[in-house]
Length: 138
Image (tube, rainbow, N blue to C red; front, side, top):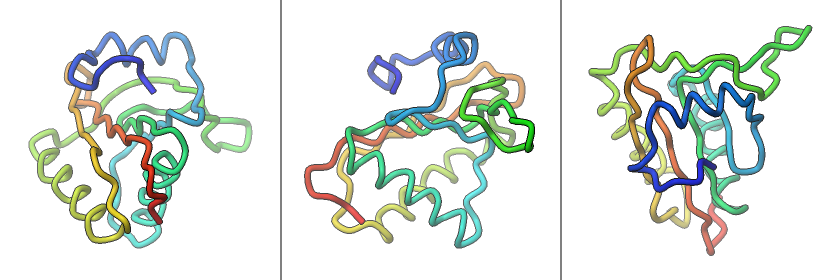
C-alpha cells in the first residue's frame, strides 16, 4: 500500500514503486491491464479485492507491467508504469468495477476507493484502495 492518502498520490509516487522495484506483497498488487470481462477475470478481481479486505487492506494498481521470469510469467516486481489506454472510458470502467463489487461481494466492503493518476505514456494509472473489512467478505 502506498503510504499516502489516495487523493495525495501523484505520478512520482507510482514511478518510485517502479524505480525501487517494490515487489508485490500483502498490501500491494500490480496489473498491467484493466481487462475484467470474462468470468475468470471477474473472479480474479473479486479474489484480489476480498483478499485485501480480509487481511489488512491494500492497493490494486492497474497500468503497471511486471518483470517476467524465464518462464514468461509475471514476477511481482514492477518493470514499467505505462498507464492504461482509453482514458476516456476509465470513469465508465470504475462504475462497472463498483457494480461488480456491489453485486458479487457479501457482506459489502465499505470504503473501496478509486483514484486515477495521470501523466503516463498510455494514459492514467488506476489505483483501487481496499480497506480492511471487519466482517469478512466473500
